[in-house]
Image (cartoon, rainbow, N blue to C red; front, side, top):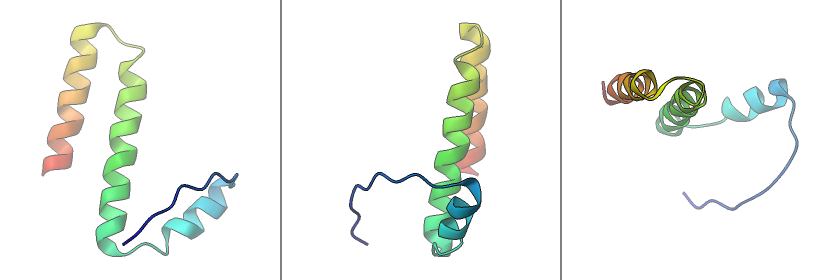
Length: 64
């Protein structure tokens, strides 16, 4: 599938409607990326050992 870069402003509800249109495979990839993004943001507020552990846990979850 080809993709293009497009910057738009969407509400959360509009984003969910867009996500609903993804294929199962694309949805899995999208969710994985969101989980990793969330872990990275949380890790930025932690001490290095805790941040590394959180990111390691997130990556292990995504590989399951």
